[in-house]
Image (cartoon, rainbow, N blue to C red):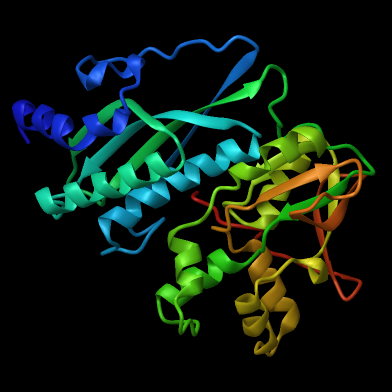
Length: 313
């Protein structure tokens, strides 16, 4: 793609997504300005997605874009931040012609508008490899109030929002491994919902938090490591959707199935620690204890869990 074509396409596809944000300069500059907000801290996060790793090869471009937005906003949600802007970097493979690039931009625009986020800048390039894109998401949180991974203390409760296991079952449904007649599980995998509505609750109650992207046990483990504590999780207490519970009831090895749900990833819920009773929207699944790492129980017995979540390396 020539420089002229690239800039013309940026103007056509992405300039409307700035929402007129002053600091974006209509994407005519090679940098943006983020204004200050007195009394607030700027929270910055970045996630990337790659074809064949984070979504199936052949996925609709608009769904790829919407998932990219949502997985990044999920990180802001876990930090109790309010999103407002983002930067996009996208590497187009040859298979992404004008129609596919337009569909990607349309999906991106739909979710940026839905979540009140302005595109402030970024970059587009071509690649001989799989489709790759990353988003840098920006959010505001009252000064000193970002909920970090560090902060959990012995005696805290461990709680999680929503339901767990739908992401990994949704991936299995998308590949035909799991029955999903109404497509609900596959939709949960393709279009996770960032729990932005929980930010006030997290600010008021959470001592530490992370989003559940790599797997509940893995992400709880990130909190434990950052806080210098251990965790004990009761997998019998996992909050499950009706679809996940139906799947669980059909499994010959219930314990192995619970471990799969707790380690599969792609749920994009919020796991956190709290010093008092869990408020509405959260389910208590364990406790913070003396020690290190995460211990899982089922039927009162300690489980051996070989891999606690997704690993890229």
